[in-house]
Image (cartoon, rainbow, N blue to C red; front, side):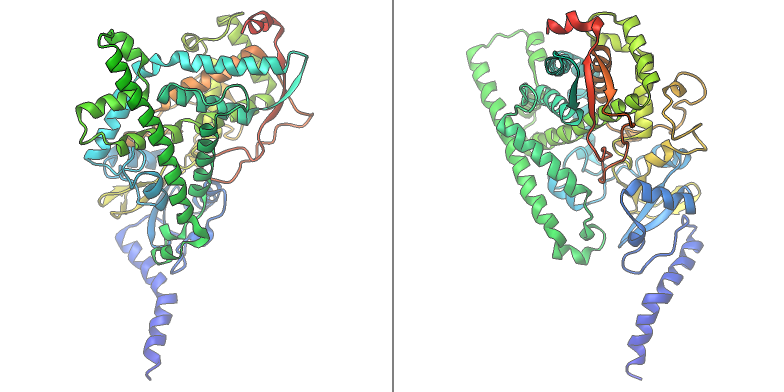
Length: 513
């Protein structure tokens, strides 16, 4: 008799508890949910890559699902209407971020623009980003940096191919390009001088970014099964702490360099034209000026957190999008020829400038179609609900993690004609438009990416200039392999290698670089 009571409790916990929870869910009008295991929830159903695994679940059970990742409740959205319900009708409710281990260590204990939950701190950080750092006026001020770096890349490629066709690996070239652009705007310095010639601090920081991205993409059971957190499986947290410390040291050096330079400049010249001074300000300079006016808020930690977010969000994302776009163009030479014709017609035998981008609608169609098929963040950064809400007629509890499967929405046959085909023309006419939330590679609502405009400019300028200046061919007869790598960001499993040679019409211009 003594053993019957604990045995009954165990049977209830293992078998009847899940059933009772399903019955309770039905009474509370919760979203549909597949059967789950007691401790793991639905984690046993999740495979890599995550966005494809979640799409399989949505195709089977519906576009709105309630999942259990260990002890966390997750709301999975895979349709524009439900996404709009979250980001429009319930935007404030879903403006929080879940407290994940990666956000704790890489997000300065949840105090950066990407990791902070909705509230006074986040609102102030958002205002800094949109008004002081990433405003259209500020972005325009740095157009010369972007143009210089793109032309430097073109110059290197031209020198490599002067004797004829050359084979080039583009992933690393694009990564160096975007890193130089971001560092030029952030700190006013180049870290790659010619292909593969990197300053030591650049090499170290690129290692930090790469390792951090890998760690964030790894499964951390402590985020979902808290009592396992103290075990630190695989030493994930220990590695995060080490990388976060290295990241902090790198950023602190940048801030201190500019602080010293600012003091020297001020003491040597008291009379500087305001306009000239403003045009020379890097992002760090802007943040240090704000620190002088409000030091209690603009601490070094806040400044480093902003810089860390800018570098993390602004380097590999643009590089990967450009690589996917080039891969698609190589597999669709008719689209590549059409893009060349547009550039020849509206730009002619001179190098593309940012002021020309508005004249190139087909180039923008190519970029939109690339972002549709291969969004760098196939799952938007997770949100978390701050209170109970209703989404699509279903009740959603406070503290629910929201995952929006952008990849699934962008390839939904109910929304797009021939959804897996690369058809930039779909964005030219009424067939497919950005009506509603059918195309949301940068998110939507309060937590949408504030750097979307900068990213599109960067990709447009780089891709357009490369199309304009070179003939591009696949390496071999087979099409470029479009297999995706594993991770939270969508990258190619195999870096893109291509054959290129200068276009005859651009030889004179290229030889003068």
